Length: 233
Image (cartoon, rainbow, N blue to C red; front, side, top):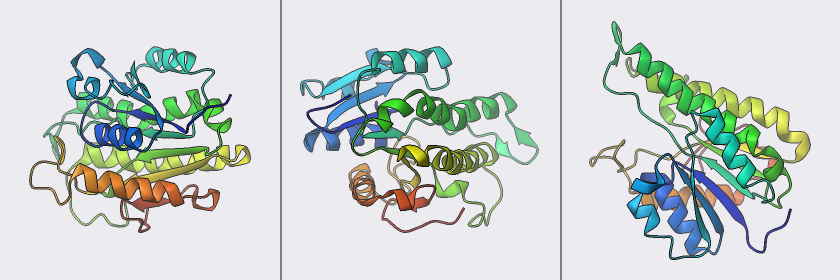
């Protein structure tokens, strides 16, 4: 498997951080595979499709058949960088004594099982590339050591579990030369982060890209913030 240009796969590419990742990697000359659940509704993503280096794919990370279909479509494609960005928050019922259990199961399906599914499905394609890097978009809210408040059970637990998936993948894929990271994108002004968040998607993604550029196999299994600083589990 070979590519004329470096290749990145971005899940959750239809808005927010995912959309900005697509935009910046396209601008930098990468081949980009932008994946989202409903491409027909992803108008902003479609607006970038005039760039022939962008290929848009339907992907529901919570659906094993959908993940398998993507893997089949990209079976001959070397993937330098896989960014597992797709994620959901889980609604407002996340406090002690008021939990939406159906939402909790759904969030774990998307935020935790989803990145594992996609990573295992595309491991061969990543392993055949020059860069060989997988990045799981986590959150500082998944850090147990930094946890100083209650609530947010659903989202926090899904990201803490994702961090454990990152560490497991790092161990299992090290022999293939694949680096696996968890990253915190910051509190970003997106639909999920809200308009009062600290930083823009452009700032977050620029920082993440610098972090990704500098990452080596020695960093595999670690947790970083968007500005390159290490985070505790």
